[in-house]
Length: 281
Picture 1 (tube, rainbow, N blue to C red):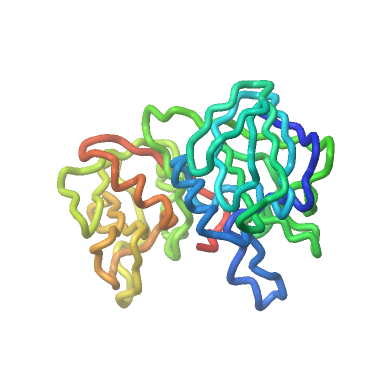
Picture 2: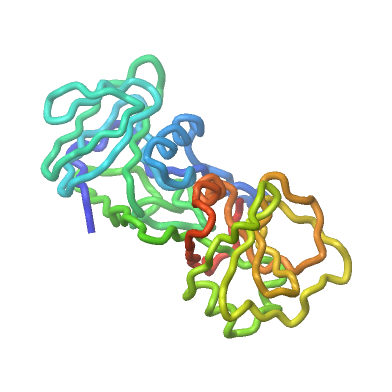
């Protein structure tokens, strides 16, 4: 487990992501980063999902000691960041060895600066989001701004021998047999050469079993939906895919994962991790 220690918290430094939209009916604000563009730039440079957590620094940036090596990106307004006293640039991938002190100052040319770290942050999540909402103590570290002495932990990214993608339960997930549900997250799938811009065909043995391979009527589908035809070999709807379909929609991938999926060469294997939650995006 990698970590950093907060030496000085800055004026208002919180853990954010792209928030938890769609919950206004329950009187829960979307929350999330105030500059989504800066967040997306940071995660794009780190080649990780755009909704990963990030530090949002307001007006006065913090001073942090990296107790472990880390890969980071700084975006947003200019916090005049320094690494061990040496100025560093924004919008670049920086490799920090263990013991590095990253220091920010009063922010200029804007109000908010952002710090992204490559890895899986070990922070509180509510409604599928790590965004800090202090009025209800949701997300981040106890739902509050960082304080002196706080520690932030993360699991460094693992170099994948086989790409792994998060898979979310679709409307017809319950139609799958128990064996097939287990198979989806324990077995590798080969990307068929018979794949195009409409859909990615996956090959596996044994095939995926379903109680019914045909919906009563056609239903809407979007890029990322995983359909299961009578062959038992799943199809992932891609960017040029149809807008409705009659096959069971057993699962789906989040939109931000499609770019990485579409870069996997034909004939290679991929794996899935089944999320216990229905995604909000």
